[in-house]
Length: 135
Length: 150
Image (cartoon, rainbow over all chains, first blue to last red; front, side, top):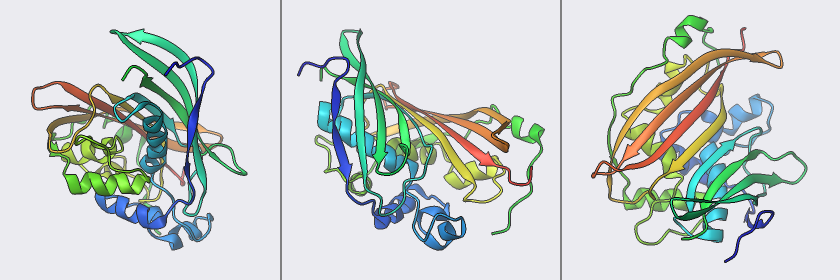
């Protein structure tokens, strides 16, 4: 596959962020933060009776997008910022665009801007990734 | 929820250089399966672990926990932490059934005020090496600890 600066990465969709997955994740992570499993706490914080998706789960949607694009060992680096919460029930779409192509130790790398899109809000996650495009 | 009082700026700065005990961690198949399912993806081939494992594997492998990381920063409550960023670097893919050696320390800690809100910004760095000593991955976690009383 030929990759060029300006290319859009094929998007990856999470049609509805599931609270059950947050609970499983909280157990595996041993995460004591109740915002991921107790909607009453989130309601008290003014965000409605929903739960807040773990940051790593939102990041994983970016990973899934990159894997579907360039394969399961393509990721070299991901840097992600989290300006807004992703909530249970949200429909989110992982998106990205190639910003540079370069070569390092004989491997062709693509630098990409990546972000999570949600209708009616600014991107809740945004950052960049470096991906091998020669795998 | 009762909030704990804000710590002094000096006590936050003093945690820079704190090293966690470190240790070993092996990603089990069941763990990788459940993690991958949580992401909405299908299991990866060839014993590859989903990269999302680079969050909890370093923390637990370094013999710490999210709870201890909250406590080291003297969080006012368990729901008072905001993620600033995660920086994940993969030098090799993560795999199931490989015993990783993990080292970790606090690399930055300081008080900041932005948009009229005060918080402590704390950065944790974790490194993973495979049994041959090959540097496999590095993760840098930057969290903001809200200080509502300041």
